[in-house]
Length: 268
Image (cartoon, rainbow, N blue to C red; front, side, top):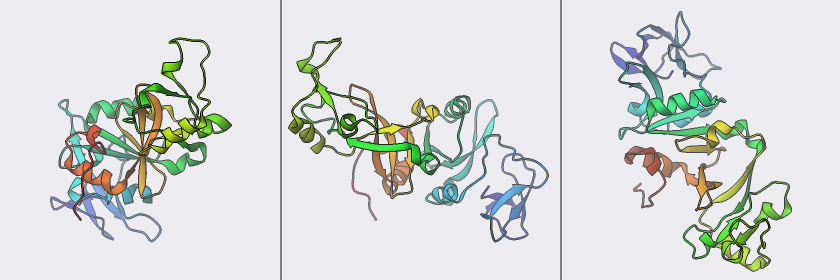
């Protein structure tokens, strides 16, 4: 962990330092070796929070995008259960920064516990299996609701670049559909895109696809990808959000679902 209580104050690790755990009050010792991320560790026991995971450099960099008073904040339920959130902003949004895999059971338990929660995933652990494919039209474009897109496949020449049919040209429930033969329509549709993209996730981590809370994937760029459902079709897609925008919204919005839904100038 990044903070211990030293004489009652949240304190960063210093060589030779000792402190107490903000959750269980056990003794912590500072680990400040030349080859490890400086951190506090329990002296005689495992970490008292079962949701704890080893902190990577990626994990630490994400936490440091937020003010110190928002990092590693205890969250207590009415039952008395306590967990340490990676980030809890002043507006009450909890951000869990996740590097390792997770079971459905643990994901659900965290989502129920925190409620107002958003996930940020380390995409480097599955990037070789995640393919970002063709753009989708602006959901507000006048023909968007009339176009039904085939799920993209990294090996499908057509669906990889965008295949759809028009709802208005096909009977509901028909066993066969008339695929848009006018390539100009597909190009025009994709040309209106504001960022939504289809993706193909080989051996997907279904826990994240089924999450009830917002999920963002970090592939190491200046922006992260939000997992979304596109239009009335509810087609899985991703949408890019700058890290600056994400951090700003997490600090000022009241609800995790409101992040990256409104666009306004960010004052420097």
